[in-house]
Length: 113
Image 1: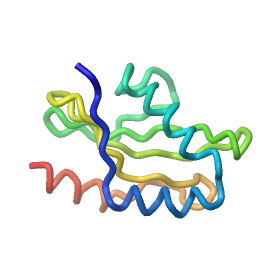
Image 2: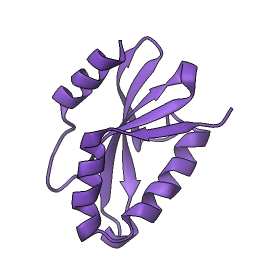
Image 3: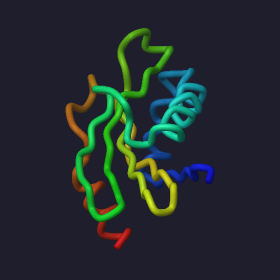
Image 4: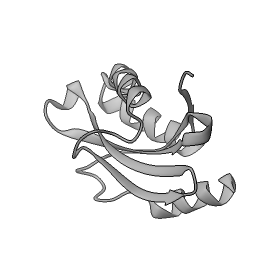
């Protein structure tokens, strides 16, 4: 079964803001989608499971951006195992923000129940 992807409104807003600075972002996101469609929970230290609620995993991962040359962005996404679906929740540059937005994660989990 093929992986389904969706983006929250917050994530779309994050993307629009960051695409202005990092022109390779759309292509980098496509590469990232290919990776997580094969290994949704990740396979290295670049992925971290933040929370688990039933069959929903909240994962933070590094998104390598060619435009940044070595530095990377962070993506927070939810993997719904039963539906083989990934919802992108947040995208941020590590230099601008240290950690993920836990309020956004809690809001998503509350709506998912």
